[in-house]
Amino acid sequence: MYYYDFQIVFQEVPGEISLCFSISGCSLQCNGCHSPFLWKKGNGSLLTKKQFEVFLEQYSNLATCVLFMGGEWHKEEIISMLKLAKNKKYKTCLYTGEEHISENILNELTWIKTGKWKQSLGGLSSTTTNQKFIEVKTNKIYNHLFIKN
Image 1 (cartoon, rainbow, N blue to C red):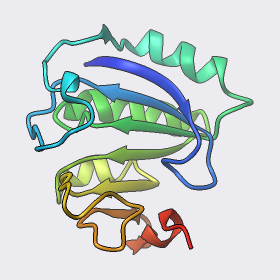
Image 2: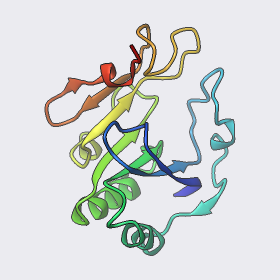
Image 3: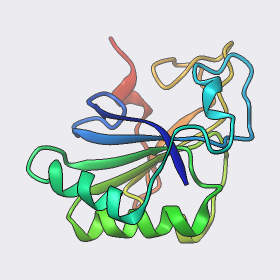
Image 4: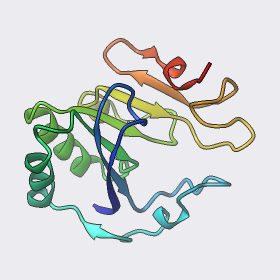
């Protein structure tokens, strides 16, 4: 599994400081995508278990969540990474353009963002979005946390 970018982010998972990995190889290729460089398989650097563990250790007292922007197409690898993060007491999140993903992946997530990017509907900060930010355990939708008054 290759990641194009690693960032520490504050808005993608409300109330959390997240280690964000943008995974390359997305086949959805949404019209108007802000990250078309993520469509190409193998773009970026290989995210090995060892490298991932280094990130988790390095930020263990600073970050609270691990977020994958895509990667569900690497089912076994992403499950392994999510389990590692949970074992290190991180919360977990996946941003996907899919509506449904494997139950095995869902079992390792605290939150999931679902839904393809549709420019005319906007993202999570739009009241007309098709996307959903869901707490997996309760299946409760938390889109309201992204909408500014």
